Length: 184
Image (cartoon, rainbow, N blue to C red; front, top):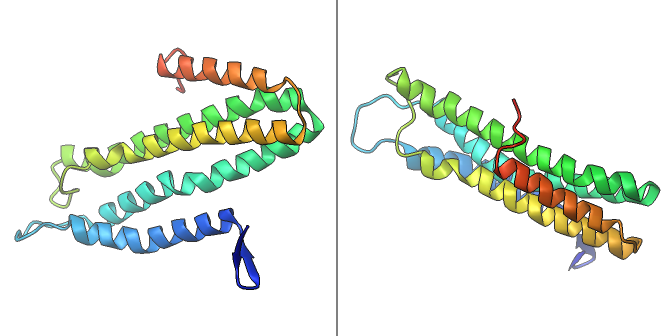
């Protein structure tokens, strides 16, 4: 908790406020920044706005979801350490993979497909440099979530169950990176 006069703000509240602020301010600024300069070409404002909202929500908004996942893991850990140790890495890994797949879908639907159809009002500029933000942020959040969740569980109830989470997380990362396990 962070003292603020007679009030205390949790880190979660600060991150939610920061993400909301970035969404409200960042999306319109991105659209203004992405507008074409000195051309009379039609601009796909709605595509840019949805793309900017996905970039903010898919990256910073995932922090909120990962926070909820850690809280659920800690709650489950108090009742069944073994199930929690097995389910936590699987759930967090699949959540990361789902967000990456959604990011790919959103990129294809909003950027690539309108350009391939040669629409007059398509996305402008090189959007590929922004497309990697969401997977990078989500992977970082996933690894931090795994670390914080396992450490917090061990502080609350020390045991050797954390080793199962570590091994399962490593194997899941390995299989996902080698694309042995792929979502269809």
